[in-house]
Length: 190
Image 1 (tube, one colour):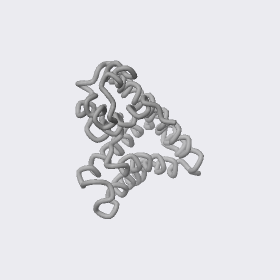
Image 2: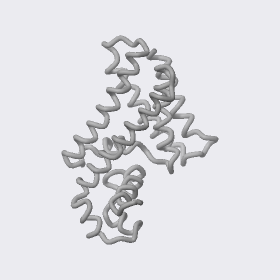
Image 3: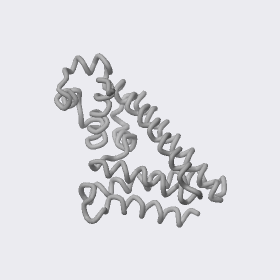
Image 4: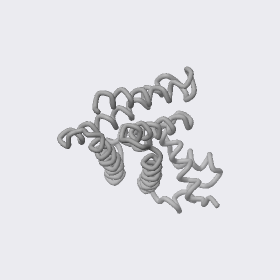
């Protein structure tokens, strides 16, 4: 059973991933869900509180998806390509971008706790990617920077896919861009 809070989070996440933090308001959520703005404020008193809840849920979802990648893939390269598939899947869902990637683009206008939660999401991702790169044989002195490059490439690939149009356009370009960028960077790294 979906609660009102879950429905609000679902709506806000879609809006944020398509429009960014500053591109939606409680009025947008209210109109989409046919609920009052005071009802939204009851669950999430401020937009910052809503954004923090969104990021917490997104971190949990990404952690679970990474665990699935870990259990499905055999080698480090396959795991990293599977991880890239998570980004492609996000875009395939209506042209969305990574929630925290969108928030990072809005970092200067984010409340401090939202900016911190966004940074923590990326720290989680960087640790995981660096660990897998280390398993692939990349020297410890290079794993941190290589993980940052890999994440930057995936986030950039989503932007490139968006620049080419909606998901599924141009014969699946959205998935091809993300996976192609990931594979090309992995070839250079490991």
